[in-house]
Length: 342
Image 1 (spheres, one colour):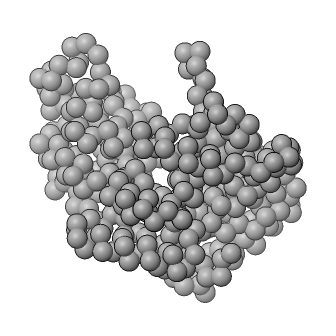
Image 2 (spheres, helix red, strand yellow):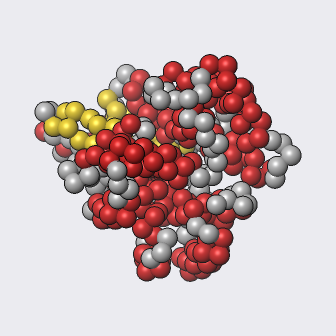
Image 3 (cartoon, helix red, strand yellow):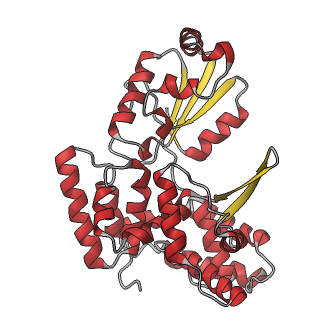
């Protein structure tokens, strides 16, 4: 079954059986190997694990198939086909991919307009004390914003792209935060706008500009080594300001505190900034599934000419490799982006 990540996490949380949650990127060597890496004792034995899976005694949840290479997706599909009696669920965003023949496919539809509005209005309760727009003024501002963002007179594809993005609780929460601060959200450049709000506060408090180049480069280098944490040790004040704007969060476990980006898209925004003026980096990472979301971010951030040039590179890569994972979505995002953005 193919479904959305949020729904998948809910199923894992509510499962009455033993369940294992896997990011698809951990399945590059195979699904059993990824499961074994999480187990201890007899359960780690290969034959015992095979029996558990085949008997349906273990619920297996694989998330983010859209974020991995075609080879990894093929291994996941082969695993599902070979263990057709097992309880296996997979989640992916829309991609060009043929699910296992035995799979049932469920597609999560975008929220209705009234559901988007209700959730957006509910975000007021999460505002910080410095939010300027509240109460009836905030509710009316939400209605006015959605009337424009979801206007049916716009290009149909642009409207549907906006509706899909506004069905994402993370993106919709950012929209609410911006409206609460008297800003006009652009659904295609939310993370850039959120960063500008955060960096303005950082500069007021610390009397210097946010070190965007150094911070972004560190995030990129960490991603190369599969480290997705916020580099708090060297950027403590920056991490705390990110936390104030709900771009980062801290976690406490076993007397150790770690900092994390609240969503992969926030990390991808910073990495995208290191790609924009680095042609080698733009080309060298096309085949790396870890940076798939970065290219989607670039589709809305880059100037038109640069985006068109990258679009051509991605199309040529897809033609050579038959892997359209990045190129197709990049083209769709470019087609949907609003003209005249700064």
